[in-house]
Length: 462
Image: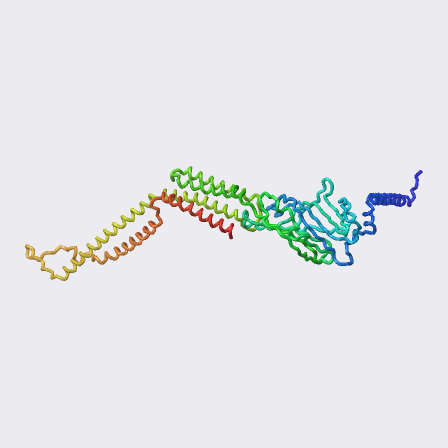
């Protein structure tokens, strides 16, 4: 036989357990109230932590100060820094005024019973409150109602960096504190001691940076929901360049000097010079890739270290190209000499042709004189008949010399044109290809020194 469960039984069980839970909470509150000293019990009587101080009498002023415990990392890849700070906030709550001349230091867990400002770090990517061995919070109440609230926080804050002059750059980062829900009509922020409200930077030691300057400012954050109070702490970081000089600049400069060794090696030693050139180019490429690993992969600006590595790579590659040019001129040097000798033979041939033209011209003058003089009668032959005079070379029946001068003039014009072309080739001709190495031994080091002077002057002083 089945037992029918009344429909009201589940509802009765739910109400029963709900009453037990409420009684346990009430007993916990009683016990919590019993452990509080009488002064605190008196202060907490009628205290509403959901209402800010001076709720109907204007905004509450909150003074802040910072103590920078450490700046752990500064990342150029993520463009942020991680710091551990002590944040101290002071404000006055008229509801917490009590008689006496001593302050009350309370357990940090009692902060849940009080009103505290809703301060947050604006550009924080991630933050956490230290809780070893307990939550690192401090609450201190003074007789006039002033409340001191201190926290130990580690936060990672974004910092927009300009890496154009990296690694000779200076970065200005900020730490911005702002109210989340209370606008300027409810809460006002201020630095308790101006620029001296932030301490700890003078004794701070960083791996790659030195803190050059720091200052504070007060501002307002404007949003669609209203204007909110904001405090800004600015600090300027200057990068230490010594590490990069030893890690990048000196090795790249030595590679450039190593590429110049090939200028003192004989041009006939092809494997040795090619080995030096290719090895220095590959090593420089590896050094350039290693220098980029600590920087953002996608960057919209050229950094100073990229410029220097590009200069060094250009000089090393230029030394390799120099040997290619010198070796090419060495292989084609006999051909150039042959062209030069051919030009001299053309010169001699031109002189011979001029001599021929002169001879022909003189023969032409003689023929003209013979034509003008009277022609003697032909002598009779022994038979009594007039003799037959054999034709002479200058007779009208022979070919006139004017017909030969025109092609000769064209030939001379062509020869002069060829001679001019040979002279232009001779201007670009290197008489001794070994002179290329001699010039490179001076021009390459001198150019590298001048470029270095311009580079360091621009990035350090301009």
